[in-house]
Structures are given as structure tokens and as C-alpha cells.
Amino acid sequence: MSLAISQRHRRTYFNNPLVEESLRHLPAAVEHPTSVEFRAYLAENLHHSSAQTRKRFAEYIAQRFSQDGQMNLFLARALAKFGDSRTGREILYFELLQSAPVLHDIASLWLAEQPETGAPRSSLLAFLEKRLGGKSADKIAGAAVAAFRRCRKLTSPKPAVYIPVWSEPPLEAFLYVLARLYPERTMVRFDIFAGQPLIRALLWPRPCLAPLLEKARLAGHISKVSELDQYHQFTLADTGSARLAWLLGDPHPETLVAREPTVPYGTPSPTKAAPVKPRTRRATTKKPTKKPDPASSHTRKATSKKKAKDGQKPSPRQLPLLPREE
Image 1 (tube, helix red, strand yellow):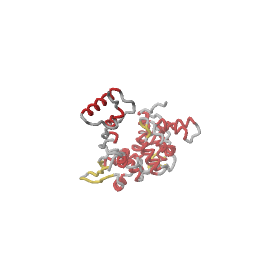
Image 2 (image 1 turned 30 degrees about the vertical axis):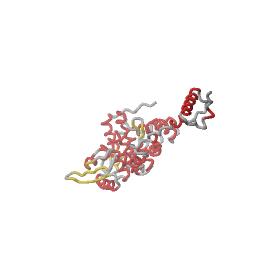
Image 3 (image 1 turned 30 degrees about the horizontal axis):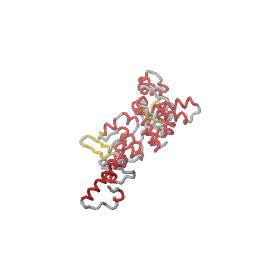
Image 4 (image 1 turned 60 degrees about the vertical axis):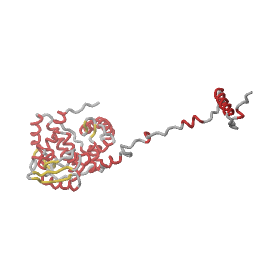
């Protein structure tokens, strides 16, 4: 059993971004939702020839996109829908930033601050050495640059010179990020949303955010966009899980709830209705098939004698059954 990666290690270390492998295999987490199951799946299905390499890379991916032993199924379902597209890579990049704080810090505090002409590798190494004390700075820098390049966030026109790529995201990626950042229905101030480090790390130009919010409103994910006094704010239309269900094509939660109660909750079960009483009276008057006991015959004989004394003829059916008294 592998040990969990410590929070300190998560914050200060990043290696092997494995972007292509994650794009290809993370949709399988829908069928293998625990980190143990998914790790075993990756160890069997990664394309690397060495079993040891497959096992090590499986550990990286399973740890990176899981929490408390459960895989990130929001990400898995999104990549199952969007695949290896610009939308899929944008969503994967967002989740990479969430899972690797050191990558988030590099993107928001270093890459987003570089000019259009770019910055040399030595600038990145100096940035990391201040935070890591020189430990693994070169290795982490290489992994971060590889992740940025594969997620289309960085170009390198010449060796060891890095230029950030600011671009408007696809609407679907924007809606995914909104749902993940705000899991509850709430009102958000635009300046707070646009100014948070994660949005800078995504390299989304600020001028594109207001038009994207309006598109999100037209798509039904935002119920209202307003400017009150000096505040520009927007209100989310529903919970994050409901908005993700709309985005990913899952059945709407309200539809699922409506289908559940097939019988009204206040209606008693048919097995609990007032039962019909058995016909016990008829059963007791039914003639017995066994031979009558002597006491019963003596009683009928005495009754017949009394009726004879009173001048009443006994029933013809009873005459053969009663012996004549001498």
C-alpha cells in the first residue's frame, strides 16, 4: 500500500505532468472511482513498456486527481465529454493548478507577470530557489514548463526563453471553472472573481471575463448580472453540481427527484389496508364430517321428545336419526 503524499510535499514539489496520459485515461475513472481501483487500471493500461514505470506514473496520476481515496469524477466526466480538445486541456490545466500548489504559484506569481517578450529560464530558477531553498528547483522548473507548454499556456520561440500565452477560454471551460469555484448558489463581486490568483494562473485576459459572464447568463448558468453603484456582480443560477450536470449532459437533478416517488409518501401501502375479517361464523356452522359425539345426540333426542309432547312433529330428516323410546 502506497503512502499518501503529504501536504508539504504537494505544495513544494511537482514532477512528471503526464498531461497526455491524463487526458487519455482519466475518463476511465468513471468506471474506477476509487484511487486504488484507478491506480490498478493505470498500471495495466498506460502505454509505457516498463511495469515499474507504469506503476510509478499510475501513482502520480491517481494521487494528483483524488482526495480521501476518491477520484475527481467531475474531471473524469468532463474529459469523457470534451476529450483531447482545447476545452479538455483548459479543464485539465485548471485541475492541475488545484492539485499542485507549486504549479499554481509559478503560474500566478511568475508566468503571469512576464512581459510579451518573455523571460529566461534563469528567472524561473531564481523564483523557485527563493521558495524552495534551491531544492529540486531545476527539476520542478522543467516539469512546470512542460505542463504549461502542453496546456497551451507558454511558448518558447528560442531555447530557455518563455512567453506566457494569454487567451480567452472556450465557454464550456469557463462554465466548468465557475461551477467548481462556486459549488453553492451565491452572488459574486466581479472584481473579487477577476482578481483572484487562480484566474491569473489560468491566463484569462481580464477584458474577456465580462463578455463570458454574459454568455454564461444566456446559457442559464448565471441568473443575473448587474452593476449596483460601484459594484459589478453576478448571481449564479443553481448549485455547482447542478450546473455541471447541465454542462456535461447529465439528467437534471430535479428530473431525477421527480422520478423517485412512484407512490405518494402519505399513501399507505396496500399491505397495510384494513384486512377483511375471515368468515369464522360460517366455518363453525358447517356440518362436521366426523361422527357426532353421544352427548350431542342425547341433546337432540331430548329436544325432539319435548317437541313431541307439545304436539309438534319432529322434522322428517331427524326421525331416522332418533330411536323410538319404549
